[in-house]
Image (cartoon, rainbow, N blue to C red; front, side, top):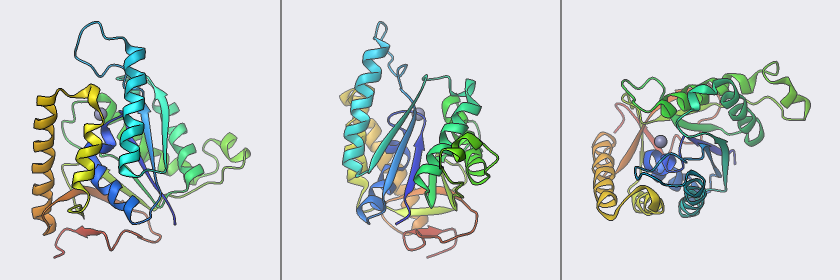
Length: 242
Ligand SMILES: [Zn+2]
């Protein structure tokens, strides 16, 4: 089955923004590849934290979370945390390479059109993930990749998470618990109190999307389609559907 590629900027983005959906697809036998653009080595408020040690523990946390969600592979692109906007060409090139290698039907990424998104990495990741779709399908983009045997590949669907204009919902009644478990794997990011608040907020958001989808819990996406098969028709609900 054609896989899904889910791209995040930081080691915990995929779990927080679309973890229940990825767990659902994995449970249905869809191979899901996770991609993390940065090492997350600035993600700690405490002064004096060692960035290298933090990057190592965040990598281990992301691997544990990926196992909980059932991902088949976790790719780390290794860009510096907080600086993705400095590397738009390189990020797009690396993502196009991932798309050409994995040949996904669908890609999940930040919605770059979201209004007032304050994190520069989230904005930069969204643009690069969308732009890499165009690059991956045309052989004159990054011909050195094609020369090594990576054929051009057209991604048929983009599912943009962290969106303020969702039009597609995935019902996650069966996998919300797994998402929360995966979020808990990111121990460096949350104190016990913060974790509890985070879980409440994520559950409330899933409930809010569930209301739109006619279910208890859902995750919402902006879906862009570019032709081809839509293998997730049975798992998603669009605006206006019961
Ligand atoms: Zn993030």
